[in-house]
Length: 252
Image 1 (cartoon, rainbow, N blue to C red):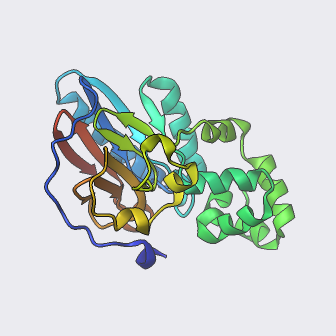
Image 2 (cartoon, rainbow, N blue to C red):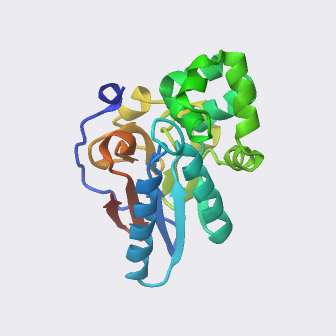
């Protein structure tokens, strides 16, 4: 799976784009159940933010909090708490949140796909042991998941956004359909698109910051920046800092 998702990371010059005046943004890539890496990165963000001049600091999580890593439930709980404690924390819905929520709704096809793409680790993190997991058929698994996932977790994930725009930047989980204006994008593309966005070489109306596709380092292109460094496989969880016309990288 990692080889399929992994792309080369070629660095291009950073265009002269800026977020909304007075704002400082940290865009956090796909966490995928890596609670320890999340804690380390949050500490790094706080330390970095403290060294800079006062600004309206916002944390934007680019989606895919769950699946593949060992502690998806812990990640969701930690960020649910963080959202209550800090006024400027925002979350984008990734394709893995979409699958998780559909599985919790009892959609059998979504549950099958969820389990194939790392959902097993999410289920285990909510208290089902491996022996029980292996003994359950899909209807039984759906019933156990509905009983074990706290309603607060589900409600939290359901509130996630599709796109966030700040000045010259637009933040999405996977990418955009390049030929369409931002206000005409479909949520399914924002969460699932890959090649038709990644291979596009024309101009875009905003600098697009996204996760979803793993690269060894932050992937800077003329009109997009990819921030998914494959934390569940590499141990490297990444945040992109943005202020005025400057960007910088923090990673574990």
